[in-house]
Amino acid sequence: MKKILIAFGGNALLRNGDDSTFESQLERATEAFERISDVILENNVIITHGNGPQVGNILLQNEFSQKVTKAMPLHACGAMSQGLIGEILAEAYDSVRLRKGIMKDASVILTRTVVDPDDKAFQNPSKPIGPYYDRMTAEGLMKTRNWQMKEEGNKGYRRLVPSPVPIDIVERSAIFNCLNDGFMPICTGGGGVPVIKSQRGFMGTDAVIDKDLASSLLARILEVDKFVILTDVKGVYRNYGTPEEELIPEIKVSELEKDLDSGIFPKGSMGPKVRAAIEFARASGKEAVIGSLDEAGKVIDGKSGTVIH
Image (cartoon, rainbow, N blue to C red; front, side, top):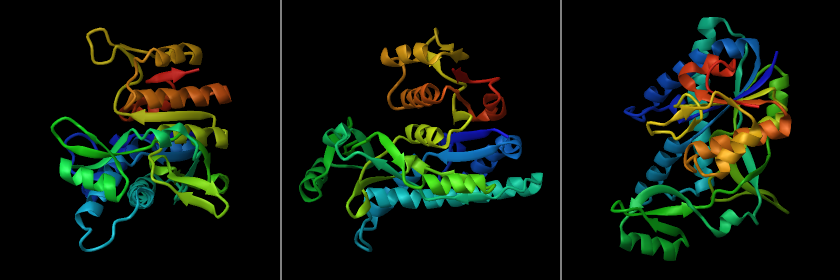
């Protein structure tokens, strides 16, 4: 059996046009597990996932219910989203495995990811989160909460938070032991809850960790045989969205890094995925694959998507 880490993209739970109800996300998650059920049956699999829409909704609920109950900090909202998505994924997986006779249980692990307090990202917050505010409200929040805000066109102002590089996974032993005991870990949701190590232990900090970079880190820690990123496109493209777009079926790390450094992959979408794949392949000497969730089986077999050597 191979050890494979599969990072679900946001389309494993929500797609364009979907509502954000629990039932809709459960349906999408069930479809996702249908596509990888054979892989789970034949391999030791770890599942990681994003949390963008879910934590965004929790932040909105925070803001609009402040007259009733106190708002939670961003890192706590991230933990809430891990629990929510963990329930959806576990329920979806159980419905698939019971129909297909898969004996392996899932184990949802709330995961904290360590970041460096001296990371330059903390001096330059750049990740917009939460709702839009008018100018007066934004100025008030900058004074009362010490938030950094940025205007986005005519939509209004949004809060900016840092996106530091993940350096360790607190629950690494728990994930490893679950895997060795025959469970399928579902973990590192949304990149993990950002924490800083202090004399008192690990303390949550308001930040957003890229889930693909955190998944790549976990894949290296667990020494998996293959790292798979499933998303909503067929793979990595040059000149994406233009008449000259070209799918890259396979590529060496050194060549892909040149493309990344040239800036052809957007920072908010394919860029972090490419960087995550490069970091895993270089450190492990093993393959990373980026491809479409709709062709998950073929992607994992290296017959679809982009294979990074």
